[in-house]
Image (tube, rainbow, N blue to C red; front, side, top):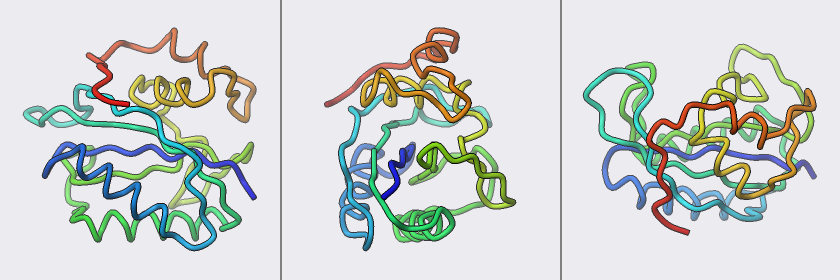
Length: 160
């Protein structure tokens, strides 16, 4: 079983409810165990102007699915919840990103792990640090050290 961290985000159609629905869907996935989830955080959008703030969280999973099979399952959840892939970094009902897959480094056309921009995103690093303050990335970088260097981006915890 691999220890996997998934980033969750939404800024459309009741974002906190979108994250709660995604967590329910994650619990139902075969060969996946939802270990725990961070609190929910509000953050400024990254991408095109005029978007609403996002609600973000990080979930810790345990799975024996291969990375691309897990990605397919996550994208199926996104689609079920109304995700449309029309504009990069645009508003969305749900975004599920594989942030870390054990200590693996993955560089495929469909999947890069560790997530290539996570070190720039406090809405990923803060929930990761909440779940495991001692967490190290595959290259040995500390999540807490990366968080200290990351821009604030109006991050605000909104729920447990």
